[in-house]
Every structure is written in structure tokens, then in C-alpha cells.
Amino acid sequence: MNKHYLQSQIKSTGTAYLFYFLLFGAHYAYLGKWGLQILFWFTLGGLGFWSLIDLFTMSNKVDKHNLLIFEKIEEIEASEKQSEQERQVAMIAAIKN
Image (cartoon, rainbow, N blue to C red):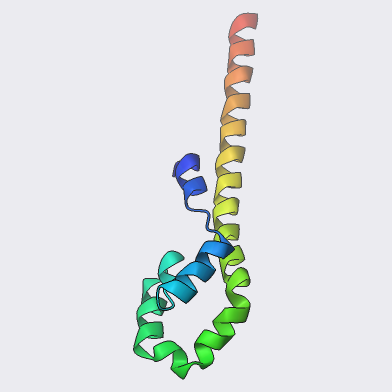
């Protein structure tokens, strides 16, 4: 995956709340969890209980989503750093020979 694509997938808690309040609880769709979103709509937000819980746990849901993305970005950066070091070692070895 491309690091820039992953950075574009980072979500905002404020935007998630806007989806929650203005788009009939579409915050799961914003986070890419369509199965949960459809279930949320069919149960009418768990008859209000689920939506009330989500009201207070929204930032945690967004943080979990972003954490996975940050971990993938770190893996990509570590891989890029490793390949750059290998390239430099190969150049030094070629110069010495």
C-alpha cells in the first residue's frame, strides 16, 4: 500500500460526530464499517441504546481506526528505511571493489 493513500484514510473525530448527528448515524460508514452501519440502521441504533453508547465512545472508535493506519504507515517507513540502508551498503561495497 502507498503511504500517501494510507494518510488520506486517517479519520477525524469531529467529522465522525457530524456523520452521527447530520446523516442519521452514518458514523460507521465514515469509518468504513458498512456491516455495522446497516445493522445500526436496521435496529434504529439499537432502539437508542447503541446510539447513546456511540455518542460517548466515538473518539475511541476513531482512534482505533487511525491506530491501525498509523501502524501500517510505520511498517512502510521502516521498510523504506531498510531498503535505503541496503542500497547505501551496496553502493559502498561497489565503490570499494
